[in-house]
Image (tube, rainbow, N blue to C red; front, side, top):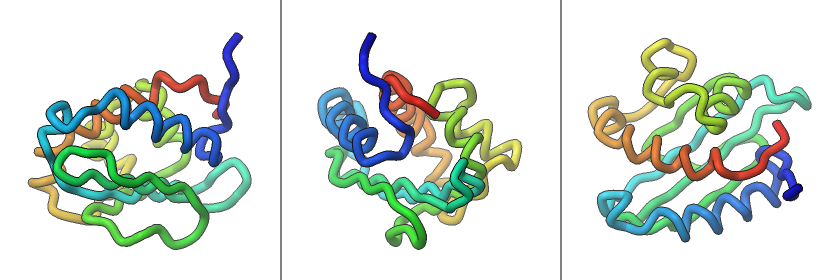
Length: 133
């Protein structure tokens, strides 16, 4: 049995970064430049966490996980820990979670909808990580 990573731990982040760099070349990301901070509310330990992604010309540039105030990003997406976990497991799309108001978006909605397919590609990679939620 393969090792399971604790969701949003530094080990999970390292594995996610390795897979994103390998599995999402710039052309798969439409050479997009953007950043987003996912803000997780109601985490199992009672805290608020963030997951920050940055792409430059389609290249995976940075990924941070932490507590407290997230880095400034083009998009800030806020929601419940369980909603983000369901997206990461591939049970629901980010776009559906936004449209059903399970997530709240700050940023340009038109651009966010254009980038939704890229977010789905990113989440499909994350869903392959053996994770303990």
